[in-house]
Image (tube, rainbow, N blue to C red; front, side, top):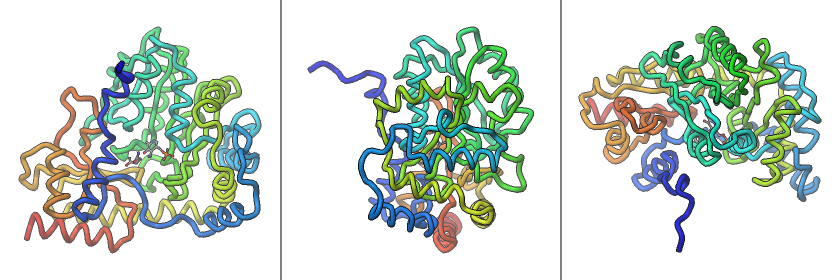
Length: 388
Ligand code: PMP
Ligand code: GLN
């Protein structure tokens, strides 16, 4: 038989799946793969239940149900001051993952250069490469995750088609400053490129960090950005896989052309429920980020007490920690396997978010969007293991 596609078959199983399987196998507390342990806002789940019984369960419009597209436009106005035409500028996707694929497959022509930032979310490179894009990587390294202007400038050329930016950045938990965003915007405009903005953690940017600013809101960027959001993150419903893209009609057309052949539509009654969610009062959004910040502080303090070198977490629901101070001498993969098997707590190795050329090897990412008692139990296990 002839071989499968070489780009895709060249990749192993995603680190999230690998570590979650290992966690199940060893009965460990899973702080690896990012997912909350609650069941989402009850009012949103209740709308889904009611709609499943009362509303059509057949194919919805390809672009998404009007209720959700209207709600996305309202949301973008309310939180980011954007004027968005829901009919021509919003599409609903099956999660941010599909949104990313639809943007990249829809826009990249083989040979186009794509500027990406390391650490990178695991689906980015496979899709860019499968689309025929040539990755140009800009590395941000722990512990500072500093964006180097010279390196950024050097990544751009006449062939740059697009930039793929994740802000707030998983797993670095960095929120880009206005100055950094301005620099990116200037280069995008200078090179006549576009920006795919993975902003799934837009509502999890902490009060003691730079404010989250969507790249699309910077001067000259409205026509050049495709902004991606995810109900999975905003409503702690990761299994629903409902995402959305906001962009000008010209850019969105490329996304729609791809979406129609990737998934065509997304479950209609989950969309209707997410529409209700986006319209929830400011209290919902305040509590989401406030609760996460309290968990970050609780868990980060505990890690520091055990002896980890804890890095700042400005956004997302992840925190990165240096395990060298504990005296562990293996790689980050060894470390995450070790604590899963021996301490019964799972994290993910930060090197999984880097290309293989000398990635950082001293850091583990912990996910803290869990009940306080789960976080405390994980800390107790780690303390007992390393200090007991
Ligand atoms: N981008 C980033 C940075 C993420 O962390 C995630 C979470 N899985 C996604 C995209 C995918 O989101 P979704 O689950 O909506 O597909
Ligand atoms: N985004 C989540 C994370 O970074 C998990 C996504 C996944 O499992 N594919 O952990």
